[in-house]
Structures are given as C-alpha cells and as structure tokens.
Length: 276
Image 1 (spheres, rainbow, N blue to C red):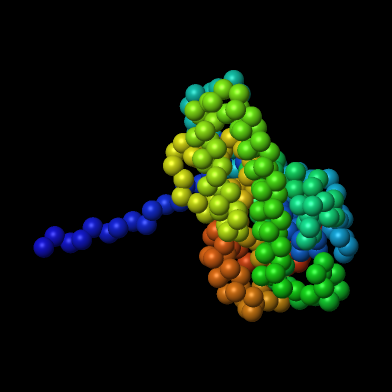
Image 2: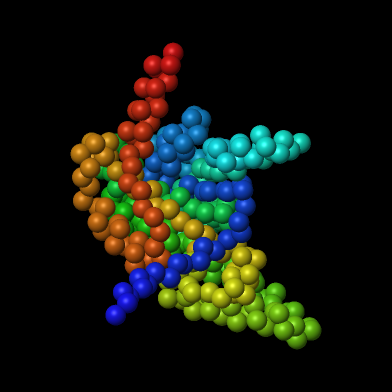
C-alpha cells in the first residue's frame, strides 16, 4: 500500500487588509508594563509612571523592517522612490472594566484600538507590590477576560450601528448586497453573544470582504505579550504561564510571548551607558 499522505491542518485565514505599513496597538489594563515595553521597542522615553492613565494620547513609534530582498530589488531597478515595509507601534492608554460604557475615558481609548491593524495584548504576570494593580491583585486570567469583554462589548455597539445602516438601505432599495452583508453581521452577532472573538469564526471569501470593510476589534490579529518578573524571566519560571496558554487556546488563540519589560529595559539602559 502507498504511504498515506500527511493531512495538513487547515490554516485559519487572518482577517484584515494587507499592507506594507502595519499598525499595532499595545493594549491592556493600566500598569501592566505597556509604556515600558513601548520604550524598549522604540528607544523613546514616553512617561511610564506608577499610576493609571499615565498615557492619554497614543504615542507612535515607526520601525522599518529590514529585508535584503527589498534592498536587492532597489539596487536592480533603481526606482525614483522606495518605501520599505514598516511597523508602527502605538502605546494606547490602559483600559478598565466598563471602558465600553465610558469608564476611565474608555470610549476614547477604544477608538484608538479601532484605528490599528493588530493588537499586542500586554498581560501582567509579575508580582510587585510597589506597582499598583487596577483590580487590587495580580490575576492574568481575570485581566484578559476584562480586556476581551470590553472589546466584545464595543463590537456589539459597532454592530448595532452597522445593522441600522444596512436596514435603512434594504428598506429603501431592497439591495441584494446589503442583504448578504446583513447575513454576515447576523453570524457575528451570534459569535459575540457567545463571547467568541470574530477572528475565531470560519468565514467564506465574501464574508471576509464584509468583515474587512468594518473595524471589529475582535477580528484583529492578536499577540499576547506576557510580562513576567525580572527574576522569573531569568529562571524561566512563572506559575501563570500554563494557565494563560490554556486560556488563549480556549478564547480565539494567538501567539504568546513571555518576556520581562523590566529586564529588557535594563538591557537597553546598560547598552546606552556602554555606548557613552
């Protein structure tokens, strides 16, 4: 008998519009290490203080992606202008429970998330009594549920406005395309009611067109940055990591990257001192 062909797992389609200028937002509760992480990524010195809403307006850092293939093509064809691929990272103010209803200037901060292509969800898993926690104690699972719940709640509000517009068009002209889009929105409504992110769904090409036309927050690709303690990073031990990984698998999936913002900041500071 011929050997059985290896069955490749079906790859999930990533929602969103492809571009060579990717915008990513650092999202999380206050005081989880977003601004420190941003400083490390960008080498800028934005405020990173020990109190909520230290960051109000989003700060941007643009990083160009090195690609020897791009440089080689530029050398070969000598275009009049060249635009390298880049990633813009935005430090977005911390969300709190009730942000979708306006708590903690939440509506303004959520609108900043709508403007990005993807999310770096910064999760606090480091113990430090000197750093205030919005909820009183360190519990990454609760924190992730708060942020996800607020994004889902905001998507519900966004969906209501979309449906109002589609209903008006259907009533006015009985438009077939609007009816098809309304069916996609109905599927999204069912998912959100089950607390499922939009990116977790299985979508046809036409449905993806409908989804990408709007800016659903839970449709955006997400990377979980788990900020653990400096000593825990060095010893590679943290009690929360297995629980966080399990939660991510059960709630839409996505890559998880454990790191220590404190340790990385020390490395940057040491390098800066050495250069001098």
